[in-house]
Length: 265
Image (cartoon, rainbow, N blue to C red):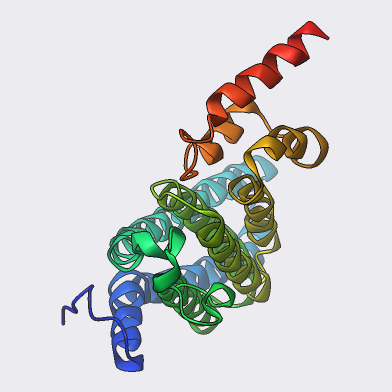
C-alpha cells in the first residue's frame, strides 16, 4: 500500500518505507536474477562437461563453444539490465523520500531550531536513508548470493552517492548546519563500509572533507583549498555558493582576488 512521505516518524513508518523502496523495486528482480544466475552456471557446467568435450571435429567444437559464450553473454547482459532497472526504480522512490523528509532547518538552523546535542545527531532523512541502504544489503545477501553482493552494493552505492551529492547541493548552510551535514556524511560512509562498498565509503569521506568549505571562516577558504583539499575551481564553487554568507561575506570577490594572485606568481 502507499504511505505518506510526510509521516515517516515511527518504526512502523520506516518499515513501510523499506517495503515500498525495496519490495516494489528490487525483491522480485533479485529473485529473477538469482534464478537466471543459477541457470547460467548450470548451462555452463552441463554443456561444457557433457557436450562440448565430445564434439568432433575441433572446428565444430570451437564454433559451438563460441555460440554458447555469446548466448551466456546475452543472458548476463539481460541480468545486468534488470539490476540497473531495479536500482533506477529504487532511487526514484529514495529521492522523493529524501526531498520530502530533508528540511531547510536541518542545514541552516537558528538557535531555537536546535535542541541540546542536536548537532551530534544525524538528520531524520539520514536515518531513513541508512535504514533503506541496510535493507537493500540484506536483500542482496538473501537473494543474490556471495559473489554478487559487493559488486551490486558498489553500483548501488555509486548511484546513491551521486543522488545525495545533488540533493545536498539544493540547500543553504550555516556553520552549525554544515557540521550536521558532516555528521550525516559520516553516517553514510559508515553504512557503506559495513556493507563492503569501501570505494563508496571513501567517496563520502572525501565529500565530508570538502564540506569543510561550509564551516571555515570566509578568509580561510583559500588556505583550505590550497593546503588541504587541492580541488578544482568548479568544486570549490559548488560548495561556497551554498554558504549562507556567500554574498554578505563577499566570498566571490575573495576567491577572485586569490585567483588573480596565483596567476601573477
